[in-house]
Length: 489
Image 1: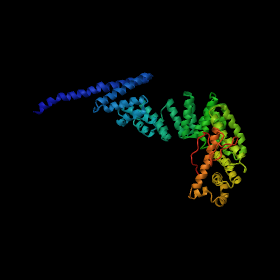
Image 2: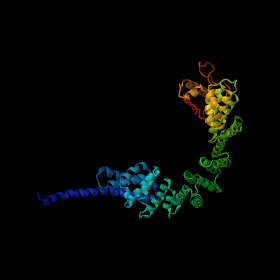
Image 3: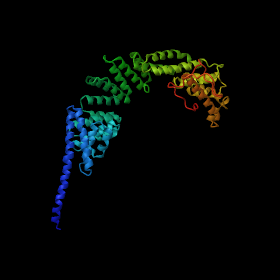
Image 4: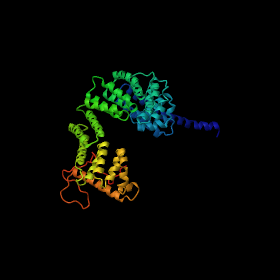
């Protein structure tokens, strides 16, 4: 067969393949692109419901092209449109896969740039600013002014999240409008440029004075620069139309942010929040913080009475801090009662006093008071099996006292199971003491929650507290202690 005749026979087949390819495009891709254009138009005109419906149809059309013609040259374009549509519908976890598998970083043409923007936005939403920065970087020089602006604005956000606020500010240069001003404010805050941030605040307030909006701004700035966020709180608090509860909440949250970096200013914030927010949830939370700080400074049981009164007022308020205040007051009262009734003649007084010291340390977070109670165990019950454990615990809280007690620890208590355990010897005696202490602690909690029926106690079991006897609450949530207790450091 001649070459000419062979080509003549193959020509119709080749033409058919070409027509099929064209059919795929015009019946599939053409409709998908047409629907995408309609969806964009609906978005611009504010017809959100209609736009979402159209984007859903884009996904269906694009999937049809991929399923029916998986080897078509239009598959990547179809997947790109599908990814864009999923991103517009807020389905970023599903959108990233089709957007990432195509060559979006070529970012050629309208669809490529739109895909890069969609991928970048989704990566930001999914918490990957590195990938987002890479995606946006391919569109910041776009010939289209709208896409170029969007890319620069979102890239600035990615750079700020990456801890590069100065570069974010460079990306924002020349951009105006509310979104650019807000992002610039956040970047200035992240950069610690407090004066510039405050100067910009008033212009942003003129556009958006929403409480929720500004609470978000303060929170974001506070992650990078607590001092700048604190200055913003003061600046916003000076406005006459800010409600007392909002001002108190911002002051309270500001105090929490500042605790690690500026404890003195944090204390002032809590005091102001408690004063401004009397009778409000944030005011009560601030008052509870002040109570806890007072407990942290408490050194003797006698100092607990005014603290108990403050907690009683908070518990009676019935607001968000009431439950915690009530639980804390119960622990405080139990600690005070145990300390007052643990003289040398009190049965198992060493156990009650030791547990009171632990509660002061672990639940009241009152280390100075706990150290004093541990010292009382050693001084009042020097021959008790738990005296060495109290000494070990007390010396951690009061190293000076612990050093003075070192000879006592090494001589008088050298044979204690606790010291033997520290030396790596047989832990049997240690375990017996710990199990006994644990059982007593749990028995005390059980009696407090549900009084036992009068009658019989198993031989060898620790005596539960009698009615009216002080009970130590091990924790505010009434959780059962672990079966085995740990040795103090």
